[in-house]
Length: 236
Image 1 (tube, rainbow, N blue to C red):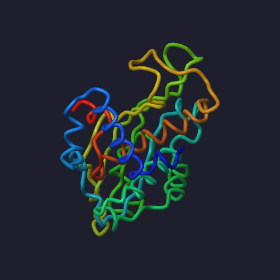
Image 2: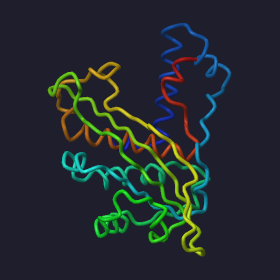
Image 3: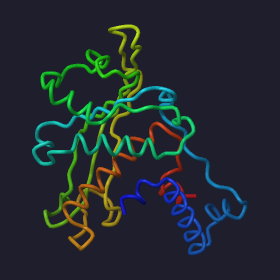
């Protein structure tokens, strides 16, 4: 199941199938028109396109409360983002190289006093030319309606810090996107007070992993060309 989440090819094929099913069921001309004309909907360009040929570190910050609830959330989210970037199959990222995740995690743990300080002050110490800094605003796996219902939700602000390794002190933030969000699972309705009951496939661990993967994908897609979201496809 996780591999399908990470597969851009399967994701695109699935969306195409949904488009066809929607058009067939409703008689609509939007998605069906694309298919009939032998076309696919235009892909979304990256919000930030400056990772090509760069060395990149993924830095995730979660506050102490979130880390108490989910002790490995920083490492898990960083790993999900980096995996989605590597598996994007975007030509622009073919020459991008990534800092070892464990090395970044060790640096974070060995320098606890860095919390709360601007990343630009120490980004040069990571040995990369780009730092994708993710500030996790909120993360949960339970519905607001009841602790018996599962609904994973994650919200994060994402920054990019550019570094010229030949010029100490040159690090500067050049891009920011606030309130990137994701939910998992998709079923369970819309809004805050919804969710699904536990099943063999839906439990605390699977919802945690699914939400991490979904948020990681939403963040990674800021940096490469990708298919439009399902709701945009179905609205045509």
